[in-house]
Image (cartoon, rainbow, N blue to C red; front, top):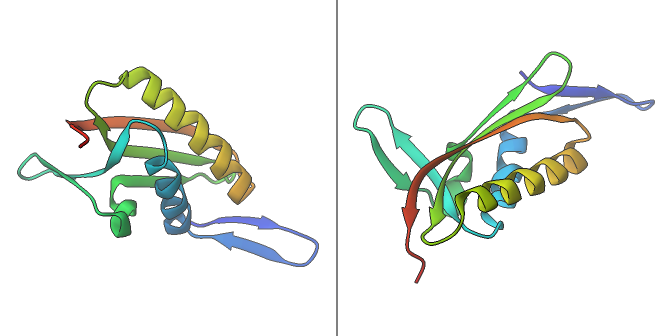
Length: 119
């Protein structure tokens, strides 16, 4: 489902992939986030995604009333507070996605899929 809003000049439609790409770029800028993760359900393996495929670690759901729900699958840096990293991620993504799309973010779920040591 695509998000849409009406203006005096017409209708603006935003694809969930656009929101996922923007949210992913905001997420990897947050302190303590190494990157997005792709989970292979068949094997149970987790792999770190490259910068050009960030959207595979994010699920975007747009409700009927144009509210955004996001699920992030991330890998965090070793030695950081997971609660501090996730709080920072949620607040930054919520603010920037709402500003970008002009649609309210209803819920953000963060799934920690792994821990990596940063060189």
